[in-house]
Image 1 (cartoon, rainbow, N blue to C red):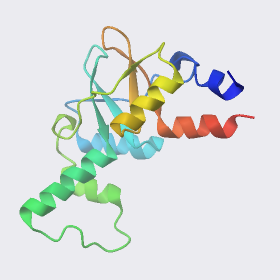
Image 2 (image 1 turned 180 degrees about the horizontal axis):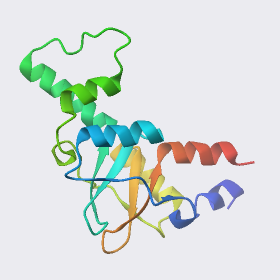
Image 3 (image 1 turned 30 degrees about the vertical axis):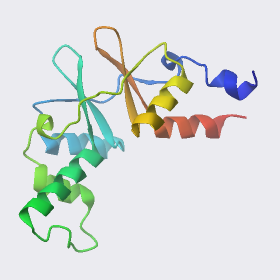
Length: 157
């Protein structure tokens, strides 16, 4: 096994971002967008009061919902001044909605002893960019993103 293959066998607990920023199902999209913009994130795990994973909220989920509404309502929401930011569009269209109405179910998850390679394969297979890391009780332990993998490879020497 060469060094690269060895590196990919590292368990997630050595690699994942622990204690990720989260939202609750009852939080508003406005609150979630604030957390995302302040922390430069494109996804937030959704947890319950016990810290158990309930889903994941991504910018893609929010944009998809806006696009679906645009098609349904046959409106001109897509025509905006170039200075109109995606964040402003999301706030305007979904701001007061609860996270639960927009989030995706977290069907793709990993456990802390899974290897980097196993999780990378899951991401490719399911076409996701974020994988929450949970324990056997579904408590959120961390998260891994495609960006984390790119950073890891870039730092390999």
